[in-house]
Length: 272
Ligand SMILES: [Ca+2]
Ligand SMILES: [Ca+2]
Image 1 (cartoon, rainbow, N blue to C red):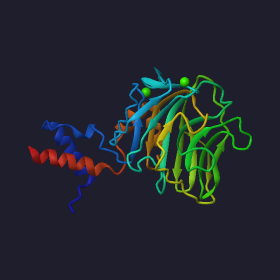
Image 2 (cartoon, protein in one colour):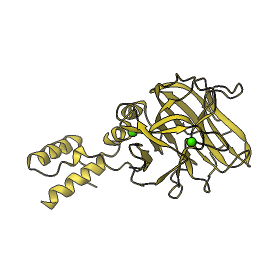
Image 3 (tube, rainbow, N blue to C red):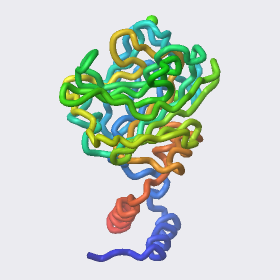
Image 4 (cartoon, rainbow, N blue to C red):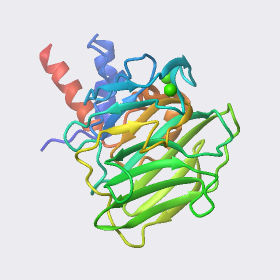
């Protein structure tokens, strides 16, 4: 197979600009690892990933000023965004994954704040939940919880985190193999490896819920720029979300995607 050296690719990109071909280098190639990308800039909870999931607002979720453009406000009482997964796109079974968002807490974190979950119900029902729970002595702070009838309940992380009320934080969890790595504002704040090496159960029958996990575990505050990617994002990639939210992240050319751009350029040239 013919492979263009980088220098040749760059020359072709420059040439494409000179001869007036549509400049494809400025457009991000589709990043197929991105399975949910919600800027929360409208009440439609639109997913701008290639999967185009539909988010349904329940309760009285409100559109408010966000960290980047608009965001969704959850009052901690019946408010959530429900996203039915296309196939197993929103499951984390044998894949790495990253969930990252901006969050502003309505209290100082003295209760259970669920960021998101895929959850069939309470107790041992299959689930995974990403939450903050500073008032829980046994399992405090930023935690990733998984459960299923097949194994004991597991909690990873338990990274102490008490948010300042009304302040924006970029919150992320990276699932890499059996490691659960937590970030606040782009900084690694703690991680824990799953010694049991259980994998997250497939929760086919449950939608992804943003702002709620089960029972009365509702998020109280504002969430913005919700992004879920089926790979472990680098700190550099997290910083592109920090700076520009979902759209900022998608605008950065992902590594290993140069071939797709090269294909576009080549096709563009040969069409002329
Ligand atoms: Ca937004
Ligand atoms: Ca409500």
